[in-house]
Structures are given as structure tokens and as C-alpha cells.
Image (cartoon, rainbow, N blue to C red; front, side, top):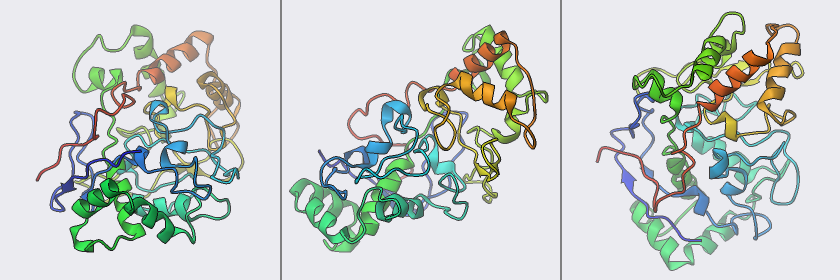
Length: 317
């Protein structure tokens, strides 16, 4: 595995998106950019297979296709891996943790959790850092990124680097974006346009929870004070879960926090059968196809394209 080049971003200004649909993100701390998919697998309890990309695979919009996440020791998590699509704009992080309000704080959970073990770094932090920085190219990258550390690297440096990479995962070039924000009327098919009308209708109420530019409710950006995160009952049990983004949703099966539904068709069936407090509705077969066509229009093919060298995002220097 290679270390990515690190580029220092100015603390005075936040990275800005290059898509009309995406607002300026909240300013991060002084950050370094790195490719989180290149954090070596020896940064895990097993020393062989577990990396950030084990649960966040680029071709799946940074999910993993499993019902629930599997840790380095084979233990199962209670929930599946959430997509990292536009993760920089999240108000909170995780399915059930409204008090985790930064990528840096969130990252400590999979790294250090022991119930269940996810990456398994707890108690091995110095061993992992020593292993990384023993490689000359990695050490050079860390030195360039964190000159103030004077070669004494800590877990916080690794966390800051990965979080900064995650803030570059910007999605805003779907067919939906082309239609709504760039005025390309042929970007959506007639079927997808009918599905869009159903999605935003009072009859179905999908957009009551899946609102905003990221289809996940409240968001944080450079202009507004962050709101409270959007949690809702999804018809499975009584506990509310954080509303996930629907961007790239066609790539992120299985669905729901516990991965119990394998297709978008099954999700629509679930909501048609759900009882209070959810809104009941009935779809014809044609209407279900229209909604799914609209949801497929939220896929951004550039988001899942292979990295061309270092993935960077425009920043003011």
C-alpha cells in the first residue's frame, strides 16, 4: 500500500464543492489530505485484512454490501456501515449517536471500540504508528503534513489525516443534480420525473425525513449554525435512527440500519406496510418503478470512479 501525498489546507477557509447542488462545507481544523483507502491493513487487530476501506468500499459509495459491519476479529456490529457520501456535511455521525458531532470523534469509535472490536487499535496505538512511520515514504508524508509534530506522531495525526480525506468525498454530479441545478431538462427520464413528483408528494411524505440537498435532513455548512441531527422511526422497532443520505442509494444495498432489506423494491414494500407513526400509502406497480427510477437518478458516477492519483478537493491556499 502506498501513502498518498498530503496537502495542507488553510485553516482560514473551508474546501468548496465544485457542484452547484452542494454548499460550502463547514471549515475543518487545519487539515491534511490523505487517501483513507490506503491506510494499511496492518492498522488492525489481526494485522492482515482490516482497513478503513474494508467497510467503506468506493464502488459501493463507501459502504460494504453487508447486512452489518464485520470487525477485524470477525465480530459483528449491530448496524451496517453508513455511506460516506457528502459526510463532511453531517450534523452527527453514526446510526444511533447524536452526540458525536465531528468526523474526528466518530473515527475513534471503529478504531478503539472493543464491544464489538472493529479495527482493534485499542492498546496498540503506538505499535500501529511505529509500523506506519517505519516506512520511509509514510514517514515523509506525515512529516510534511504535520511539521509541528517534529517527527513525534500520535493517533490524532492519523485521525486528522483520514478525516480530511473524508471531507473530500463530495457528491453532486448525479442526473438529479443536472436536472434540478444545471437546468438540463433531459437529464431525467419521464419515469424518473414522475418518481420525483411522488417522492416529494404529501401522499408519500418521503421528503419529510429525506430532505435537504443531501436527502438526509439537517446538515451543517459554512453559512449556518448546525441544526440538531435528523432522527426518525423507520418502522423497525421503537428507537429512532439517523436518517441516512439517499445519494448513491442504488449502490448501497442492503438497506435499513440492520441491512434487513436487500432491494429498493423491498424498502418500498416495507414502508407501504408500516404502521403508525409512519404514514401509510399504497403504490401501484408503475409508481414503485417510477420512484426507484428517481432514486437511481441520485447516483453520481464520478463519485465512485477510481482515484486518479490523490483525490483532492478545491481549497483556498
